[in-house]
Image (cartoon, rainbow, N blue to C red; front, side, top):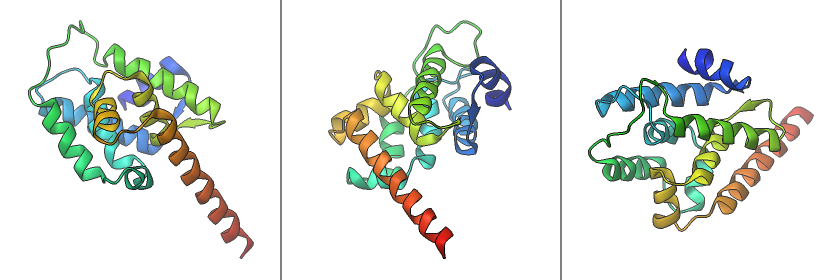
Length: 163
């Protein structure tokens, strides 16, 4: 509910169910790291299962490998001076960037793949480190794979409607 009540109202934009589920999982991940604050890396851990598998495949990996690598890199939780905010400023900035990206894609809601792209664009987080160092991915290459996957899905849907 936090994402719809706090972030939805703050940004005036809808979030897909997968983004809402990822955010809720991020809350759980934060708790696993004994943190009362949802940081960008917690959000990434929650987002991993909701990222289109074709993106992982295009870089020769899968969501479990990325999840395990992320947890390993995160190791001991970092102390962040976040005051009393429940959601870190970095997370809010990633959501803002994701909403801008969603508008560029002409989407009416923020979807998980677009939120993932926003994380990569912001840098300075586990998602960025893994994708750029381990898989030598660039934001534009991930965007291309996501766009191709989306286009192929739309083509299949159009074909099924003709049947």
